[in-house]
Image (cartoon, rainbow, N blue to C red; front, side):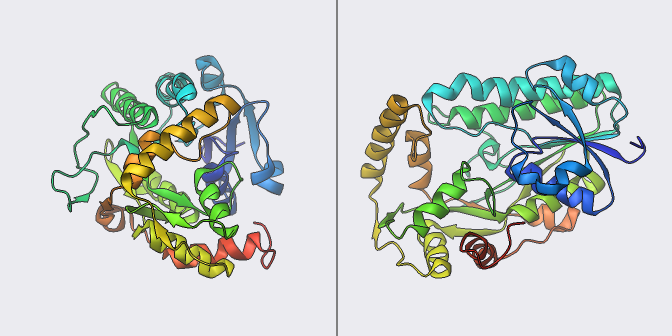
Length: 334
């Protein structure tokens, strides 16, 4: 593998990382992925045979350093997304401690550049109720912020610590990512709930959504054009949960949700879902922290990514159309 063109991708077997890896290979980039020995290669498909594999664990710093030998650039995409109370320690170890290990390994290996994949969860909340959130919105360590949000915020601080120590790095903050991915992703659960036709009610709030292909393209643009230490919000449309669900329902040909869940009932549902998940050792379909967020409307501004990185973002209707076509068997699985 030619070091002058090689990149390392963590999280390459996951939802966003697999799409990024495919795009990089299609662009003629020599790619090495960093994965666990138990990772499924299903989302990579035949691309798994066209890349180099480094097996290790984010929690083992030495395995990261070894994987970065002969590598110029690193995309850190790996993360644990969970809102289950029992996963709090694991979320911290993977997202915060794991990022610290990535930063340390990159510094030690002399990597030219790092792009860190953060989240909108690490952004602040607007001072005004109807204000738009962007990369400059200050973080507030409010008690109700989830363990996941706190872990992603701490991961960002680790990247900035690395920058202070000489690392060239930039950060991206994707919004709620939709696309064709594994059934274990949070957004796939939303898609499946709508597709079943049994989703009768939605939360009253709203959020920002983005196509996974646009996130992968944004990561590549950040590597090429992103300013050191600067954040870039990667998000498409600001939608209400009702509009989001109705758009998906229209594409699947099922009835859209008819009712709106009151915030008080949403919070109770989050508590009950957490209890059921704890007993069954599964991911909760709703949690207290996500219930609070879903009850509110948050708007985001993607001006910086469009102006500085040249990013473009598909309308959600296009994303929903593609997801429905693939899951309905009318289009091939990518």
